[in-house]
Structures are given as structure tokens and as C-alpha cells.
Length: 262
Image (cartoon, rainbow, N blue to C red; front, top):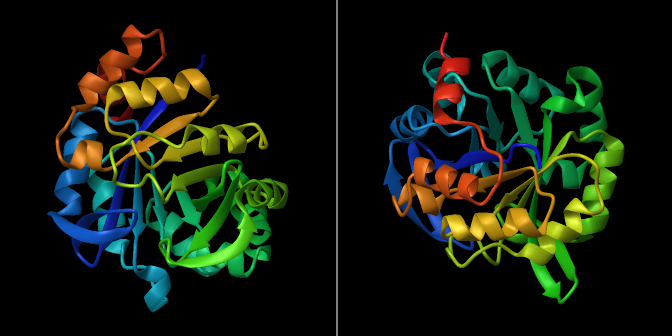
């Protein structure tokens, strides 16, 4: 089994790190720059920043944290929220982001996936998918931070996204988000088995055991965590050690800091 990447997801509104349950009841948790720096120093593999209200207001307000991260955090990071055009993507990548994540804009105009991948390469394009379970084996894709249904089957949508040039999938279970009750393993497995590009699983991690179960049962490439880290339930080191003890390959903290310190 190849290394499973551990990713911290930071949902941001204005200047604040926020977190809710199933994308509702959002709580302010502090300064995202300070939190991001702490996760970097503690050995996280990657970061994902999502501007949660960008699509609603038609703009992305994460340029300050992108600039901060470029100068202070030396691991890959992805930026999403409100990126609606090739020009938006160009600005974020030029500011220092390694990847961009798109959801609402891609659903409304799927050609954007093709345009971005042809200009910047599929390796920098993450298709963000917010999934809600409809029955035992079916999930619907949502946009606008989980508020608006699309009528799209999640499995069919990720397949189309890959065909059009997406290089990675960020798959978030809206039902499990912030609950700390574990992942929707069926959802993640259904997506992983129907695409060939990497899948980042997000939504529901409450313990290292949840992550270990997911990795053992699916071929997921990465796990994104939010509440589990934000509320200090477990440290990155504890998660990494527990995974290693279950024969799951993870990078050592020392290697991450050594490889990424200029």
C-alpha cells in the first residue's frame, strides 16, 4: 500500500477558521494562519483551504492566507471556493497554491474543468464533490457549501470530471461532516472504484481507528480531517503512529519537515 496522505482541511469565512456539523451551525475557531502553521509544524502532509462563502458572494477572499502560506508553510496546499474562471485559477496558482479545488463553478459549467486542465495541467485541478446519500447505493452531488442539490449522481459526476481533466477528487460526505462518527465508507469505495485518479476522503473522521478502517476497506489515496484536529481530539503524531502500527505506510514527521524546509 502506498503512502496515505494526511491532510488538514481549513474552512474559512472572512478572516476566521470555522467548522460546523453537516455544513451548518458554524463555529468560529480562530485564526486560520496560526492553525495552518501549527499543523505544518506538527507534520501534516498537505493543507486544503476552502472559502465557504466565496461562491455565494462571487469572490475568493483567501489571497492573504495564500500569501502567508507561500512564505511560511512549505508543504503543498490547495485553495478552493469561488474560483469561476481560468483567470481566477491563474491568480491563485501564481500566488503560490499547488492546486485549486472547484465545485459550484464546475457543476454550472463543466467545460471549466477542461479549460483549467489544458492550460495548467490536470495535476493542479481538484474536483470538489459534496455528497448526500439518497438511498443505500446512491448519492447526489450538492453545491453552494452543501445547500443546493444538483440532481447529479456522485458516481457519474466524478467519472465525467475525470474524463474532462480533473486530476484528483476531494470527496466530502455532507451527512458525516463534523459528526466525528466515521466516514461513509460505501460512498468513498463507490467513488474510488469508478475513477482512476486519486481520491481524498473527507467528512466524519473522529479517531485514528476511523481512518484505519477506511484505508483498510478502500483504496483511498488521502484523508482530509477538520474537527478531529481543530478540537485537539488527537494529534497528527498520534494518528500517524496508529496508522503505522496497523501496517499503513505514512511519511515520518521528520521527513516531511526536512523535505519541505527551504
